[in-house]
Image 1 (tube, one colour):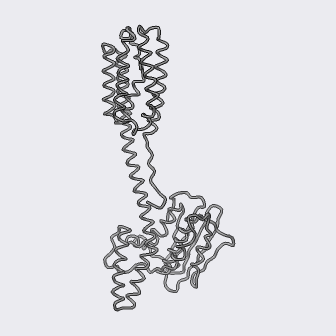
Image 2 (cartoon, one colour):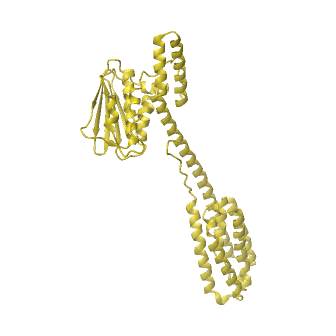
Image 3 (spheres, helix red, strand yellow):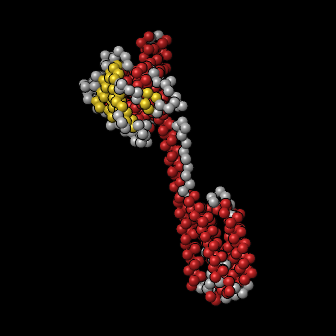
Length: 406
């Protein structure tokens, strides 16, 4: 992953566990209130009081157990369901008329919370198992499957299975999202490494290949080997199929890159973009800057300067030895605009697509990739015979990965 970047996993089911915690507390209060209202109907009030007292202690003591999936163990689920079933089966012992009146059981709707815990923990199959046991206990408590009993049992059964299924789908979606975020982070890191390689190693290999071919002799053999390594490295960082007949890289130099490698640091508050771009000025490169500093975040300033360097490298490589280049910096209220223009022959139609397919990453990654990560845009305008202009725009407040190149 990129420096300082990590994939943050967010649990989509965690809100359901919090809801279950609240449900257990609220339904406990409802069961206690219902028992207080019906206290005159209990033939053995002490049974109801004893069970509800135990249920209160159990519910409050086990709230951490239903806070998340890791805490909610199988053993806890089994004991929790046993408490619910015991409460259902104890109801006739406390209230002899409960079977005849179709009144609520001692735990009342608290029992559904135990079933929902099974659904959140294990999905719809676990929910079906728990709700079936609750249904059997209710039928035993009533003595026969009355209409209200069947209605309540089906409601718990269907609701718990549906929630269990939703949880399974949510978990699958969460895994897919986490994998997508990992792939995205890996892709961004690969692009960053490819840019660094393009700005450094590939340039050196291309220079060695050219100089070796020019010197001849043993140097020519060294140049040939450097050319082969350059092709292999380009193929590795891009995954592209590079034509076997290509033996040299882009005709670019290290001057622009080395001018910014040690500028600024992560701890600096701001960097003046002008100081990073000034080393690019030379006999054939004019530099026009504002009269005041152009402050930017150090990382953004370095990336923008490196993109300018990549554009100048392409001017040297493709515009010809006699081509001139101009750098213009504009400090707008909301963005910084850097324009790199040359008077070379321009870029033929389709050349950029072909270069990217061959693994030549000057525009694809050194320019476009950098601006995309800064939340900016890179617009390339080239007319054959009239030179090339690259306009780089970086917002002063990052808009995320919104950069494009047209």
